[in-house]
Amino acid sequence: MALTACAASTAVSPSLSPPPSLLVPCIAPMKLPERALTQVEVETFWGRDRVALRRCAGRYKGLIDWVAGSDN
Image (cartoon, rainbow, N blue to C red):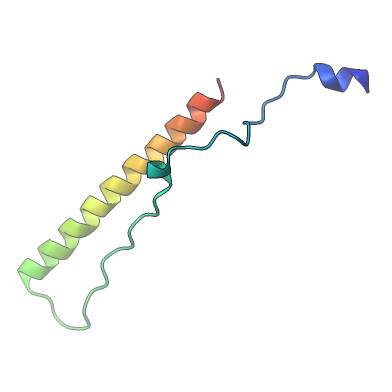
């Protein structure tokens, strides 16, 4: 039993939490109307989805970096 106290702890302290900006949920893809879309609508919906995907990927990477940095 005495040896268990000598083992290094790898758990992250529960008091540490990532910045709230990294915990914002990702935006769902655009819901498309049940009709044929114009070229402008396709480009607009696609553009909105791409922007949301980039923002989500940035937060995801930031969260990964935060976790990797908190291990050290």
